[in-house]
Length: 396
Image (cartoon, rainbow, N blue to C red; front, top):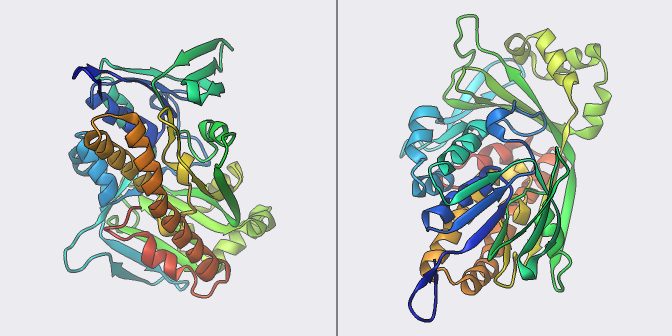
């Protein structure tokens, strides 16, 4: 609560745009501080919708992401009831043999495979425990005046227009952020985006006939193949989320069933019986490869009225494994600044914007360096990706 001159406190009226992982977590941090929070999301309530193609189904939760969840009381639940520990990398050679590279053989630390939908739903469900949090789905941001704290939303189903005002606007609406688009209209705002030539497509290894895992579950499985690769993360239902990374030219060339099967028989032969030929064909041609974008910008704030966090502020390519955990770390840092500055928005937003960009730029540069030097040039077949993406202590 904001500290007023007479010693009293004012509850802030905060609007969070974006009800994904970072937005729903930030809503919890603010709610715990006693502020009124309204969470607006363009999509439907993820708790009531099936998994959408084109977004990573599961993610790797590292210590910095866990720290944020601990602050809102959800770490133990995720780790003990849902997360699957991954103690190392299980590397699949082209001849079908494998070998293991542990993450931390000395301390035995590990990272956890967690479901995106489950975690997002858990964060939203936890917000139901706070009377000071409102959730509004199917609301698209169509206009704003950030300096005045004004936002206009359109309900996507009824086309109704809703106008709201807030003491603070937080944009956590992803790499294609509508809030950031408004900030870009401000003077002295630096912005850079870069699409890379690789895309990704998600496949699935189902459970075995007994409902169990088809591969050892406590590892991130990796098939490194020069300029393209596959990875697989375990799911709670004993299936595996498989992600194929390739240049878009490769995806376009595999335009029929015969080409696809021959490609997998040549480069990923041991994966075919795991996925199943018909399922491989069905999953591959059910959608198209998704692009990967890196975004760097600053400042992250507009005076004491608006701030962007997560991918809205610093989307990165996945070759240093930062994404979710870096966004969660934003929430942790922001909460620390609320505590440090006694909810003084001018000081909080300025310090966050002045200091956080250095870390996020460095993360982005490392991820892009890995891509350019080790992946696009095929110099080590994603070796750097494998060795740096899953680092137990990194802000993945």
